[in-house]
Image (cartoon, rainbow over all chains, first blue to last red; front, side, top):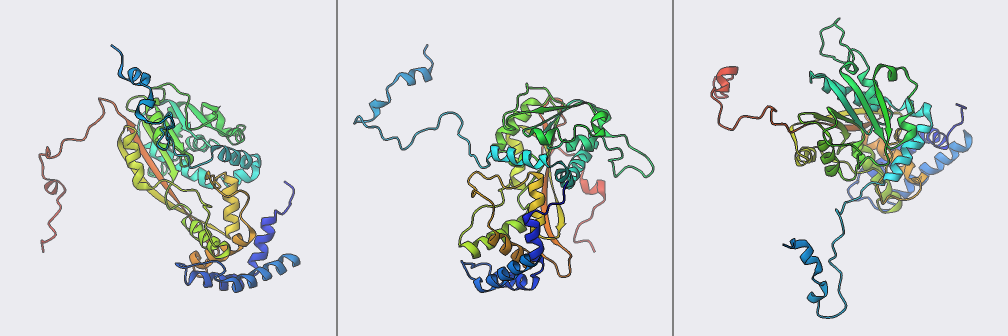
Length: 59
Length: 356
């Protein structure tokens, strides 16, 4: 099989580089997981998203 | 004499309604109404697509092979010849592979080899709905060690077999996709010869509970609502009564958890897809999960389920194994209650809790 990286693999690699932001976002959701609502952790998520976007541009 | 139903059919319904317009709010669905949960076409396509990538598909057979082996270990306890066996929902014939494996018996004394179970089986019929998956390993050497027949059927829920055909029906990791499990079990019971076993393994209740939960949280936080991303599964406590209802006797149901470690949730979902085990619920959302939800899910899964210092994330697969026997009059029956003549504590030498 030719070694063609699937988009999801690239995405996974980029996500792996943002473990600090991911942990912050995860912690924010999990601390109060009985009353999760939309955009509860929007700030943390945006940080995570920016980090992943930057990482995927690099790699 | 006119049978009652023909008589009733000739009575015009109108006579019950005063006006000409009939309100039809309580109409009866013709035939046997059935609750549809899974989209069968989607499921077949998922399996078909997954198996077309042969290399990937073989790589993710670890779970199905393991479960097939454990299922066949249960067959070791039945000291019989099986002339005609059915593998219901065979996937890539993982059961056939397990049956041809020698030394399956882990309890056998060391150094003593046990022959493969295939020697006791004269004919194995493997049925499934996906051609690509069923015929994937047709050229592999294990096919020569067992008399195997592959049969492609359009639908696993209606089986084209005569009553009293099989000496055993095996099924590994397939019947959790069946919509009408009671009807299927009824059919299996009819197809079996009297005093023949049905041995099956399926995913149950808490399978992938980690993924189910974290996807729900991710959906809630990102989009403000939930959509089912993990298909529902039968519970352990239902399986016994299901078998009972289908007329099986001497039931055995047991549960096993297999925890698989994955590097991340993306790898877990890719593997599920390659297995052909992705969500196939009828009213699922069209299109793939959005990247935002995937990203949120990865972060939430990790903070909920990853253990400190562990290299990967755990995913639990709960297997329900069931054995039921078709009724036969010469079958051993349980004795009537109260008919025991010996005190078990005398026999086993157990003591009272209050004894010093």
